[in-house]
Figure 1 (spheres, rainbow, N blue to C red):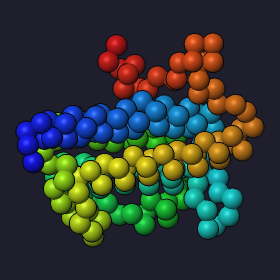
Figure 2 (figure 1 turned 90 degrees about the vertical axis):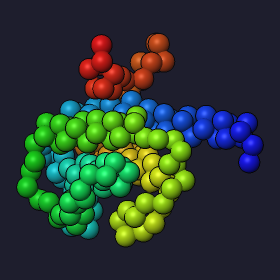
Figure 3 (figure 1 turned 180 degrees about the horizontal axis):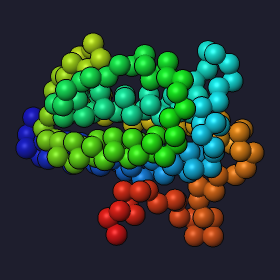
Figure 4 (figure 1 turned 45 degrees about the vertical axis):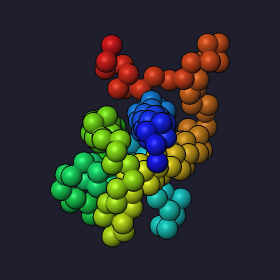
Length: 184
């Protein structure tokens, strides 16, 4: 492989990691915050049936997944995840605590990804009992957040019976994330 191809691959890898950071912190987090702030604690922990997850369980699951795959898997922190506990939790953890946990977790994820050495994108990592590349781990967490964010949005719309106003259609501007507001 020549050096021109390596430079192009590095540019693509950097763009991929940057886009993942943008989706997680500037797209999904503000939507999750809007959902949680729209509902009561009781609604956040409501479940359609015993086999379904509540929004609260999904928030715990998202934080656990991102911590395991990015913070521990790529960042080298200790993996203390108890995955089943994320789904078994029935205590009504206040939504303010869930938001704080998501913010903290995504702040740490963003820190790991901001400092991630692009040359390591194709290296293998042992995460959740499987060997995956860093690229696959980042892609997994991003798509995983997308899927569960969509579920949380649907549940929030069902429970609140209102439009969540994610975009200001007069300016076409998306809701700004907590990380963006913090940097001002």
